[in-house]
Amino acid sequence: MSVESSEQALAAENSEDQDSTAEAVSTDKGTAVSRLEEEGDVAADYLEELLDIADIDGDIDIEVRNGRTYISIVTEEESAGLESLVGRDGEVLEALQELTRLSVLSATENRSRLVLDINGYRKERAGHLQKIAEDAVATAKETGEPVSLEPMSAYERKIVHDAVADLGFVSESEGEGAGRHIVVSVD
Image 1: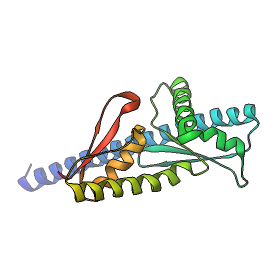
Image 2: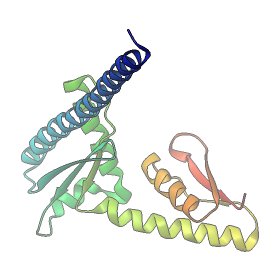
Image 3: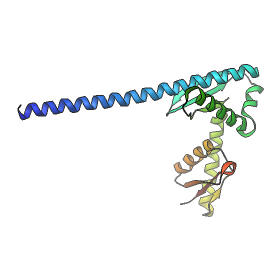
C-alpha cells in the first residue's frame, strides 16, 4: 500500500469517526429534546387535570428552550382562579411548580427542571428583580459596602445574580433554606 493510499484510508477513517461522533451528539440532543418534550406533555396533563378539578379556565403552552421545559398557563380574560394559583409573592406558584416536577419525576423517573409561569407572573417579576439588582449595585457603588437583599427563591436568585454580573459587580448567596439571600458587593 502506498503512502498516499494509507493517508487516504486514514482520512476516510477519521471522517467516519467524525460523522459517527456528530451523529451521536445529534442523537444525544435529539434525545434530550424528546425527553424535554415528554416532560412538557406530562406536566401539561397534570396541570390540565388540576385546572379541571379546581374548575379554573386556562390555556397551557409548552416551550422547550435552553435545555429546559417552560410551561405557561394563561387566560385571555381576568381570572381570579389563576391569580389564586400564583398566590402572595408567588408562593403558590412555587409550590405548584414543585408538585408538577414531582409528577414528571413519578411518570418519567427523571428529575425535571421545568419552569412554570401563570399569567406572566414570572416575566413581570423578572423585571422587578432587574430593578432590585440595579438598585443594589447603585447602593454598593455609592457606599462601597456590601448590600444584602431579601430572601428569595433559587430561580429568582439566579435572575439577580445574572443581572448583577451584567452590571459588572459581584454577588453571592448566603444563608440557609428560606433565609437564603443575595449579597451584592463591589468586588
